[in-house]
Image (tube, rainbow, N blue to C red; front, side):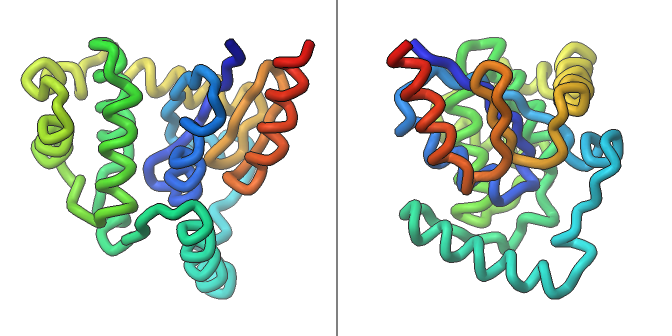
Length: 195
């Protein structure tokens, strides 16, 4: 079976949009949470949608278009108050009990789809518990030194591999940036499957 790596940050609405389409690709997905602002700093990139009011307005309209196209809810009301890095660590912690995929789906939906609060570890654990994950087992892992180190390692690796924003998908050594590159990802996976 083909495999892809999905480098993402919960603070990126385009990561949410791309994530909503991954199951339909029919491949094994390796979830690679990262701290995108640290990646951008390491490679000399700037978060222009935050720095340019005109681009920010455009992005808000663009997100609505993509959400409609993908048939997913979009409610960014609480996004800036949410703790994306704690959500990333929760996915990594859930990976240690074989539930990273379920954790990512529940947290992305809550973060960008439902617009519910994820600003603290207890709020994150409540969402994971409602999704059927063992919140008690995850509580001690989310802020563990091992999980923190893994997130830092993913962030360093992303920068070293040329990532400059989120989401970024790798199929082998081929890199694709943004949810709007999923057609190219599909083409690449088709070529790999045919080989």
